Length: 266
Image: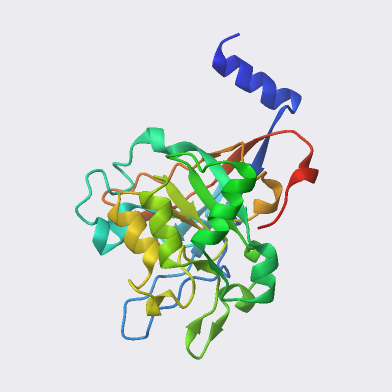
């Protein structure tokens, strides 16, 4: 059998399972909130055109409008000032080979349950590697916090001083980019950075280091609890928006069917 036929057979027989890591997009899905003096990302809007009625007797369709960085979405290098001059830095020019890549899942659920502002550190990543092996080059690193199970105001978790959500600290994300050469970093929260990362040095270090190195971000993921620490492959093809800084997308994970009892949090 050809490799593709083998893959299709494995999916058909359940040897490989497909997990949807994407939230359903609707008009109530939270979007990032910036200071009022700055431009705001528009929420999802759905306008019904027809539904088997006088406006279209045999068909159903909608107009939609949406910000590039709404719902489960990808950040391209051009999204941040550090990546504005990167070649192939917009979603219409991204290398297609980067849209299929392995993933490592760092389980931070216990710490995030104790502290909304939990920060993933290099020490925690090194402890994960001692347990699961070295993080491969050109792989996704996904920070599992179970934030994807939250809804509404609890998801954005805004207070008077801004959002309070978990993310990586500056040392951790710089190490992942420079020492491990990751393809990208993914979170279950609205951004790849912690909610209070505007106060870090540099501000918003995940954006700063990832996009400055031509790497990617994934946000608003869900169902990370279904992925093993290693061994999954992500499919992450964004919409081909001309000169787009990012895009909503449907993130799918291919995982081998196996006993999950060996998963351990870090």
